[in-house]
Structure formats: structure tokens, C-alpha cells
Image (cartoon, rainbow, N blue to C red; front, top):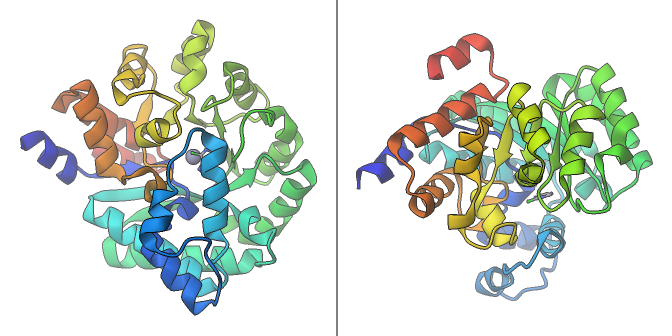
Amino acid sequence: NSINKFIEYIPKAELHLHIEGTFEPELMFDIAKRNQKKIKYNSVDDLKNAYNFNNLQEFLDIYYAGANVLIKEQDFYDLTWAYLNKVNQQNVIHVEIFFDPQTHTDRGISFDTVIKGIYSALEDGKKQFGITFKLIMSFLRHLDEDSAFKTLEEALPYKNWISAVGLDSSEIGNPPSKFERVFTKAREEGFITVAHAGEEGPSEYIWEAINLLKVKRIDHGNRCLDDETLVKKLAQLKIPLTLCPLSNLELKVVKDLKDHPIVEMMHKDLLVTVNSDDPAYFGGYMNENYQSITDALDLSKKEITELVKNSFKASWLPEEEKEKRI
Ligand code: ES4
Ligand code: ZN
């Protein structure tokens, strides 16, 4: 029908995407085989059957296990290239994506290997598809401050390739305040900052991300609705929220997409965007996220257009590029 086509063809920007979360089972088995790494599951179907999560941690355990088979620069290239091919078919024209270096450096893979593979695929995607990009280096918040500092040091030679730093992984018990000093140093080095906050964690973590980490966007931020003062602050400062509907459904952040707060947030004047988070695990890329939220909440073309415009407003494209899209 016409709203499907509208979603498919409208040019979009993706602002919340973990490249490790685009690792499709078929590619995972291919790469495991060529690297002679074992996977706990016997087949693609067995693996897919394990994708049944009750919360963030259950997902993260499987996500880190999947990333274990990535060893060589070519592996990171292939992972990123597969993602770019996919979103190119969905008319995504700009991406701002996370990579989690500690997921790999902690198991002996060098920072250089990871970033070179990802970055060269992004450059090829720009050349072949015209997809522009920004790279966000995300710290794992379940690890300690020292590990984050070490990762920041390793990133400095690649400053020109990395636009921002972020914060992800197990939220509850790992507040933004744990990384205040790392983020201060990152800002001094010229990085933009963002953080996952208020996905499972409380609204206080969103306040900390704003006040201590000086973030330019909040990733997820669902729980801001618990605090009316915070909602007003986010609206007033025009701090975008990068929402991920299918992720929220799969990780039980919402019980049903009909309960998703995206429309309520738009009515509260929040700058909200639709993103896919970890599409290989949550059952859909950008268009499936737009489609499922449209179906559940009966969004109009006007509302979809507003969300798409928001994705460009909230991006770090140069102002003249944004103007063309909004
Ligand atoms: C993530 Cl959905 C989500 N939340 C927090 N950290 C993550 N890393 C990858 N996906
Ligand atoms: Zn995320």
C-alpha cells in the first residue's frame, strides 16, 4: 500500500546503530568457518531460535558471543559492507554508527584492525552508494574507567575518523557518572559526546548524561517520561532522542509497540528519531522499524515525514546538507 512505499522510498538517516548488531547469522557462520572459530549453535536456525530476550543483559550476552568470531580486518570490512548494502536498498542516505572497540580489544584484537576494517567499508559505501557517515566510538559501561581511558588513548591517532564517543552495554548499576572524567577528556580532545540512557535505567541517568557528560544526543531515553522537568529540559535544549522501536519491543522495554511512547514524545515537543539499534538481532532494519511503529500507532504520512526530518535535524551533517532535507 501507499504508506509502505512512502516509508521505503523516502531518504532517511540512521543515528543509532551498533555495527556489531548488524551481524547476520549467515555471515556469522561464514566468518566463523574461515577463521576456524566455533559457534555454540549448530545452524543458522538454532542460532536464530536463541534470539528470545527478556531484558538487555540476555541480549548482550548473545551479542558479545557473536562478535567473538570477528578476527581480521576483512571480517570488520565484510560486516560493515553487508550493513551498507542493506541500508542502501532501504534509501538510508546518511548513517552515524557505533562501534564497540572493547568488545574486540578485550579478546586480543587490535584497535587498528577493528577501525581500519569498518572505516574502509564506510569509505567504499560513500564512493559506491553516496552514503555519508559519522563514526561513534562507544565505551562499554560494564567495564571500568581505566579501560575506557585506555580505549580513548588508542583512538587518538584516528581522531579524524571518529566524530563522537558514546556509552553502551549494561545500563543499570553503571551510571554516566562512572565515566565523567573520560568524557571530559574526550571533549577536550574534540569529540562530540552521546550516551545510552533511560533505556532500562532511571531518568536520573539521563540527567547525568546531560549534566556530567554534556551529551549532544540521548540514545533511547524512553524513561525521560518519568520526569516532567526532564522532558521540558530535553525539549528546551532540543536534545534529540534516538529511539529504537523494535529493540524496545524485543528487550521488553515496551510490552507492545502500541505502548511505544514515540507519539507522546512528539506531542511533548521532543526531537525523536527512529533507528534500528541491532537489526540482525531485533528483526528489522530502518524500514521495518518505521513500518512496525506506523502499523502499531497508525502514524500518518505527515508524522512519518516529521520523524524523517528529525533524523536529519538530529544528525551531524553540515548545516547546508541538513537544509536540503528539512
Ligand atoms: C545495545 Cl540495545 C543496546 N543497549 C545498550 N547497549 C547496547 N549495545 C548494543 N546494543
Ligand atoms: Zn543502542
